[in-house]
Image (cartoon, rainbow, N blue to C red; front, side, top):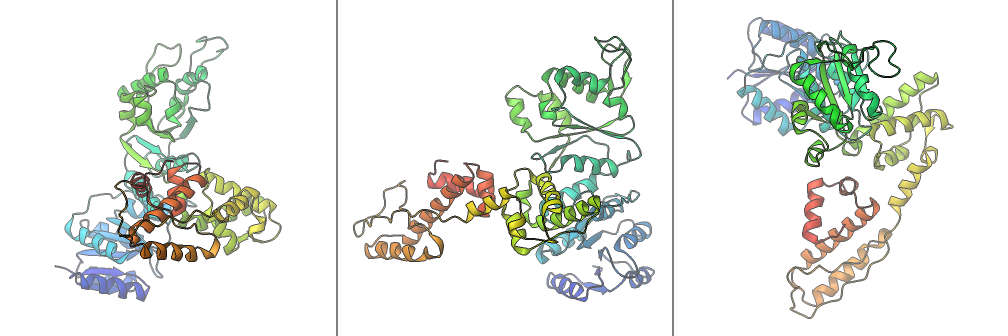
Length: 492
């Protein structure tokens, strides 16, 4: 087998990744710059090329493009510490096999390279599209998945359904899909189907002829005609009136529509991207959304994570939004102290990225100094932090059972002492002593179940029964908290 070529100006990356690959039985050859790689390619070629994206003397994207011309079947994996959409899209549009963001897990990197060795490269060469600034930012793995999906969908004109909570950036994703598509030169037209009265929505979408209804003094082009040759973004598609869903289905099915009051079919040369914060499957079951339309829209689904699912991105987004607000207002960029950033990272942000952007704009205007401290944050954020830090009321110690007695099957385990401030270890120790003295079996199991039950109940109380938010605040997965609630018999 030919060696794996690792190209990075960082010697530590070359060393660590090289050792991991050698340990996995893969031969390695390391390069510090693209010039040496280009010279070596004249006489030889690797099994897989792994290259950093930004290096002195030449970029990994330039190297990738040259490799695609001279060695079109060679798998190339792009590495970068710059976790933005442009890097991912540029890599995929230039024909990269995969995109690896730094810092990466070594085992995952080795698995990816092994997969590249085993699989053939799928042809993806499309002209690189450059933009002035990244539309989307994120280092979280969930956002990297979104970037990869946008990169893979770039050459396509397939219908896409974007799901995610309000404020999570669905329109930004739709604009990115348009901007990096073959229709980028055409218009991007967006319409929020929930914001327009149902009596006007049909005319907004499909246009109307003169005299079609009272007040229609002239003919008017609808959004489908305005988006000719480009992309039509239908936001909050789940709120579209049922009777209009039939007309939309017809356009998606045969590509033609009629203006309101018109008799001449009009051809729709439009790519449709839809978005919703609702569960469309449930709306189909409830009879509020057409199942055939759902399947027409759900060709490719892109789920955008909520901000609380990507808390590691908050610091990156705060810097970005503060810089942008400062440019817009013509002032110096504010900085956020570590304590204030910790508050922001612990806040659930029900309004997602849009809420965080508004907070940063508020700070740019209202914070008195250049460094934002906790006291400078909006009151609702400070109050949320205070509530989260409040001590939990003491609970009653469990009553010790007779020696040798086992708990009844299915019985709710006793609760340990509550954790009041920093002194919670003492009542826990006392509880453990009493159970051990009483000869209780499986003391660790009892205390662990009691601990988990108490913490989950408090978290559910704090989030008013919202399981997903409670799981995020506790740092556990949604499936985990659901399973624990069932196992522990918690009534939420």
